[in-house]
Image 1: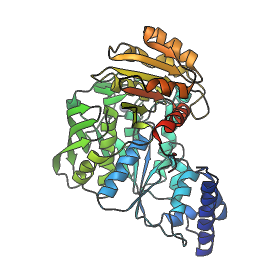
Image 2: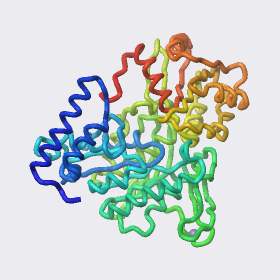
Image 3: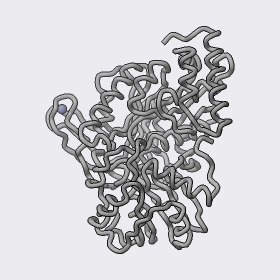
Image 4: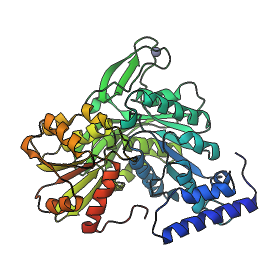
Length: 463
Ligand SMILES: [Zn+2]
């Protein structure tokens, strides 16, 4: 897009800042409105305010927020000044609000770097206005609302975005055949990241989302599995296959509730190979994936892999993603679960604990969550219920009845207790006497956060 002239730029930036200030004064975190207003004043304002910036855009189903956090931390740790919106607004106008409000009054960027979380369907719009230095795609899984076939549409939308930004370096998950296929038939430079077979991780295998080879339509075979449809895939007919990643986690030395220590094999731009050690200050296998993505993204904008890897030791969790609270001396960890793949990963994580724990499961079916909750039928609650360390399950939310039925079927037994009131739940949890994992979906997380915030004094989400 052509950049607007100075006067429309000045007016548009002023409108954006005024709208945001007005919203903040009324105590609302409305994130899209300032962007809408600014783009009404000048359609191409985003092109002006992003000119000359090195922008990394992160999209994909799971891990976007945490990966953004890790990249931003890596960029900042390397001494570069990086913009990162903390509001989680990941649609065009929300992204616009953040970029435009951060510009100076003449519309010039005040940060040379930015990391933007972008909804999968919004990528193709966003890249019409800005030219990312890198586009990171974490993975693709069915969301609850599109359990059957929808993931292929999502892939198509991301591909359209990629085709509109041939200059951007693609940073792709090497083990996800859907994500990996984005490198086919495009001129973009590609950096792949992944987990090697040698780490010895095998989660639950679910190939429903994998689809077939995009080149010839034949099914895949796998040399190894990581979890769901991620792994060492190869087409049984034409030979298209998983490629060895440029950033590969080759060994997990230690994994605890506080994080993990891993070894990464890194192929630098000149082709030289390096082995790095990284301590990742967030737990679970999926955060090792996010960490590999972050290191790969950092190298895409010229940050040494070692610098990025070192920064992972001090990264903090994003809102709702392994966020840890202290509640009356007990460790409480919040894990947002929004789809079957994410839910199964969360179960893998909590069932890997060596201490007894309590789990709180909440299921809402509002617009932010998806109205279709049929995915709970195919999610591995059996794995959770089979864990002897799971001592108590509280289940609640709009669809508590369905959730309880599913948990009973999965073998929850007399550990299961239904709750209806979040404040009463938090009061109960205060005397639980063991670590607590909270596994809500999106709007339920907001309610839980409210109830917990009263006790722990947490900040509002847009701060
Ligand atoms: Zn093929």
